[in-house]
Amino acid sequence: MKIPFDFNDKTVFIMGGTSGINLGIAKGFAENGASVAVASRSQEKVDAAITELSKSGAEIIGFASDVRDVETLQAGLEMIAEKFGHIDILIAGQAGNFPAKALDMSSNAFKSVMDIDLQGTFNVLRHSYQYLTKPGASIINISAPQAFVPMELQVHVCAAKAGVDMITRVLALEWGGEGIRVNSIIPGPIEGTVGMERLAPTPELESACTDSIPLGRWGTTEDIANCAMFLSSPYADYINGAVIPVDGGWSLGGATIMSKHLIKAISKS
Ligand code: COA
Ligand code: NAP
Image (cartoon, rainbow, N blue to C red; front, side, top):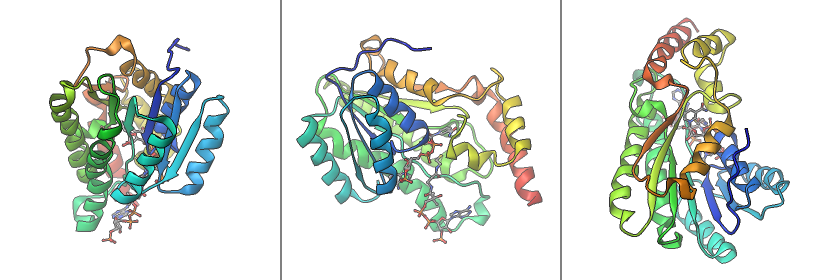
């Protein structure tokens, strides 16, 4: 279903916007008139995303940056400001994940996900602040059901994404007075993504996952893009500090069932 959004004259920056869900969000905004900037670690992925997104006819730019490296992030943000002047819509979607028991993780394994997901989200919001449209900016952090559903093999992601949603709430308070809205989207299992390749790597796990979703289907990147565009549209002008699951009801119970299947599968291998 195509919802008529109008983002002409709006600018969007998506950290981690070069693949999966975040590329789907970038596509949604580009196809509805926005100028879009994307960034991630791999220059190759940035170039491919620019080529793909440019098919919409929108102005697309990008740069390579590891969200843990504030210097390249700041340089990229300056480049966006030079080209676009300001950022109307900011999305922090970068993340890292692998399923592992706490005792099979080194301190550095835990830290790498905390640094990418949690510290990285702080870095993106903190350093983009000066370029945000005030009043009027919409910030969206891409969280996960692990933020409030404890899942085995996911201690790093659970801790990091819970923190991401607290960044959402605290900055909704701190920046709301300036007309900046900050919200989180919690995607459920989204088809064709690296995230789900890692959490449901076999046909058996895929089907267990489908069974655990109340709506009986995996989500699409369009489902998440639609929510991101709604949250950044005038229809959502009074939504601030919200954490919104777009997951077919999965986080109501299915995520826990799924983690039981995953732990069994990993123990066998
Ligand atoms: N089990 C246990 N530890 C693991 C692991 C696994 N499956 N995969 C990586 N690690 C550990 C590494 O051994 C390393 O720890 P060490 O230094 O003590 O050996 C630590 O995690 C960091 O790994 P490294 O590969 O150096 O980090 P990176 O910064 O290059 O990559 C990751 C970050 C590990 C999160 C990587 O999976 C990644 O780049 N992910 C991005 C894509 C993704 O996850 N998409 C899904 C989003 S939901
Ligand atoms: P993905 O395709 O792997 O997307 C992750 C993006 O982040 C990529 O563009 C990646 O590009 C970038 N990235 C990773 N580490 C980075 C770093 N250190 N610095 C900068 N960029 C980095 O994964 P996805 O599955 O679509 O997930 C996207 C988001 O949705 C994540 O926040 C994830 O937690 C969330 N989510 C996903 C699902 C799902 O079903 N897939 C469910 C719930 C939540 P590079 O490799 O080039 O850096």
